[in-house]
Image: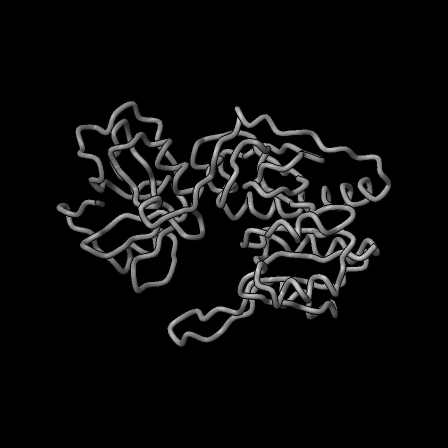
Length: 311
């Protein structure tokens, strides 16, 4: 059984390692090209490339998997199965149809809910209490293939994107191994998705993270959790971007007469910010040009004025 792995970010690494640790012959890892990052624009390898090279697996980094140069490579590899985890490109029909045992995709949501680019972020942002992982048999649609396996988990009240990312990454690796074995044995059949129940997890934009303090406190906190630590929810303080990585909502029934975004006192719960229906308490922040720090440390170096508000 020759398996070609396709994936790019850290989320995919547990699945790649699990295939190797369970004795499967991973004949290659296809990942995105190295990209320049940081002030020096130094080219950085994607996490899957680094992991694959450490495991002694050949790495392929096509600009586009539908280009003929890569399709020639794919035909020569001739995989029996493709395992795809957060790869980042849409596969052409030839790649999907070629493997005898199909293309298995690890998708971090309970399909058909949250099809699309950001399925870990949006359940937290929307205040959901459950999510999970789906192993899907890929087709040409966007996350619309037959469901092979699913497993649910709870979203804890203080889970951030980072927390949920790691939980789903580990869960997905275990579920992938079960699905691969069952598909090979011929004991696992796919189930069609009910398209009428489909919801979408659109790509995050810069505006997604801009906090509207006139929202309800719980909604603001969910946005902060769902974008922490990357790309980060933010507001503006004196024309500088203030990223907020963790906050909690207050139990008050009103903002105490304060306008949304108005800064209150530092309390045990954090720095008090007025919202439409109460307060949010900031605990972990990063001002533009500064390091990320706890709110107490931030306030030691940044003295707020009574006129300061977050916008």
